[in-house]
Length: 522
Image (cartoon, rainbow, N blue to C red):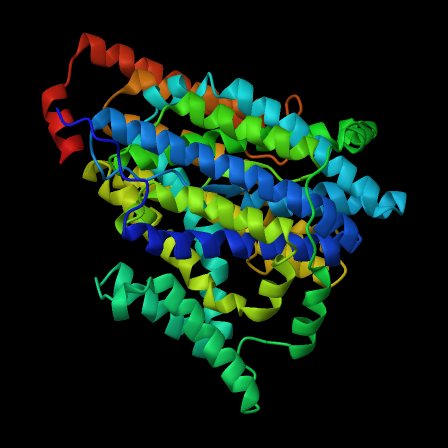
């Protein structure tokens, strides 16, 4: 056997670096804007404390997953292994800001208190991940792939792909042109001059259109020359420093924090498990426990240094692998983030690059993950995949309604749930189906996949799990408790009973299981 060491860098890593790197950059720009303009933290905290800690966390995460990929490539003696992408969890970025940091900052009159509560929130979630990592392999082993990939596809289509798709049409001259540049290369195989990565070409063309249009009196991309000059003030070298006092300072809000930290910790656990399954479907099998516990460990390190955002394995492994990403792109992205965050360059990039030029990269990832859910599962399980999308669509729809009403200074309760229903907006239905959507998607899709396979006992077990999770508020709810939705929990119990009865009948009157297996594998 040839035991030569795997290559640390491949030509395709350039493509993945500019694709994944710009994805990470967008998230850094977004969280910076949230901290400065929503929580209203002072710039010395944002650029001098939080971003350096975030940068170190991302450097540790991307470096670790590059090392895992290197070990896998070495063990299997192949050069096609792609490292898992990772970074700040995007859904949780908004949750911790709008559900934890902003309300506490407003109630206390001090944004520093909001920051401290965010640190405590991540502290709790980190331990949920580290402990849950030892349970995840068992869950992954018994759950149909259609449920794991379907739940992931739902997140990808709604919370990853929809916003960039909408942004593209709000600024189509840049958005559609950049999208076409990426599609021609990453789907169509077009090679640009001297092999320049498509992501870099898209960013360069987008910036050229934006600044060129501004020079001609046209506003493409919303560029602001004054912001470019102001961004230079953030230059300066800042190292992360311990923030233990701030972490434990947030414990006075522990009651409020636990309501969301534990459910979202479980959300991260399931999503990471889905992403590991997605990578395995793409040919790279990583150890689930080590992946999930690593997320918890690096999140804890970042938290103790002042970063109020959780780390997560990202959706997108098949996409980066498809464009040639291997080992080096992950580690190189970590180095890039470290330089940007420690040297105060994030604000400059915020002012220099039009965000709409980067948005098509996220849409591309949404397309890949959505397609994979159908391509890498048995054709007979397609209904289960479609069902897995629906709770995520409900969660996304509710979020859009909530945000719109909040912008108008009101909320659904003030308008009246019945009034909304009278106009065709079934807000209560969106709330119930979309609450805990990642778990709802997983359980419902697993239930359907098992029924399709005539595995009625397993279907009953998933329905029973749905009853327990719903009873305690982990599914169909946005807060944990006891007897949160007893009617829905009872419905799952009845379904579980029916499935167990069917399983018993099947045992006494066997069906043609061989035929069923062939149908499922078709």
